Image (cartoon, rainbow, N blue to C red; front, top):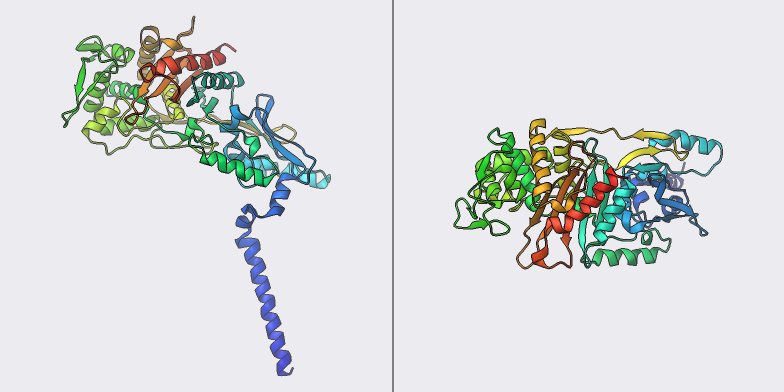
Length: 486
């Protein structure tokens, strides 16, 4: 072989090797990133051309795909968009959120549990379909939560979370303000981008599911954790005499903290039950100071603080109880202030644990995964994640919380003929901003079926009229009634 031919041959061989290396790189190294690239129109077309599975609440779809008259074949639709958007999230050409994201493999039909279905579709030359996802949501409870938030005065911000105490099933999760996921599902990609930009620029942050994505000081609802830590210490019970009075002197500080109403809680010495009934700041500041940061942090963590537990819905924020707070901060933590923050889900878990003899159950929103023919492929099993308190402590707290509804600040949640356990909370915000209103409860107290947490972050309510009982109590009551009296 003469030299020119040899040079050309070597050059062609190098080009061929370069082609093989590039093909290997694109197909194996960069395949995932290229598939996820929103500029990859082949992936977009293939995704939109497959019938995506439905997200179900009961027997009704809250997200489904219907035939369309364009090249993409199917259009994703959300029949009750605003009410369920925090749960379903959205499905668009560039991303997914909520259940649409966490269960994307099932809904798109790519999940390994749908292998037989895909094989049958291939052999029968049928168009592939995605699987369906059944949520744990109780439709009546979700309606009550949503309607309660919408009834708040003005452009309110808040959330409601309801759990089944014995299993961790999420029975309701509503958030306001919210958004219309149909705007993301459009096949007009320019319009989708404009819609996304508008929502992301909105100062009220409608894309956040406040039930799991917003952490704020829990205020007096955290007194449940403080009371639990005190009883678990072995030094207190519901009838123990504890400090009352007008003000508490913060340790290592010249500052004092009054009670929320400026009163003395009924005297210098009161029972722990009475302290919870009137939400006495002095009592719970004293208890937290006495217990110390380590004991308070340990108790909070047993309830779920400093960790996350909801695995089948994205966007969960971690509720925090810092382990490095100094003495004044530790005392303030006893009333849910200082650096303590919580999501409505976390406070619902605290109430649910007390209702469930002290067992904290892992919350979940996906009940079942089903094939396109609705046969069940998988079902979520309830799982206990910690023992927050003993059953004896849970019984003591339950009796105290029933008394708070019957004789104290949580009266707005009372249901005729039903024992209800509840606690109000009003948490101070930054100077110049109205406080946050909280409410937690469960019912029936002797056989709990539902635990609820309500957060009203803001509303057109006069600051001197803001209170967890006034704003959150009626919402919690309607949600509990929806579950126990369907």
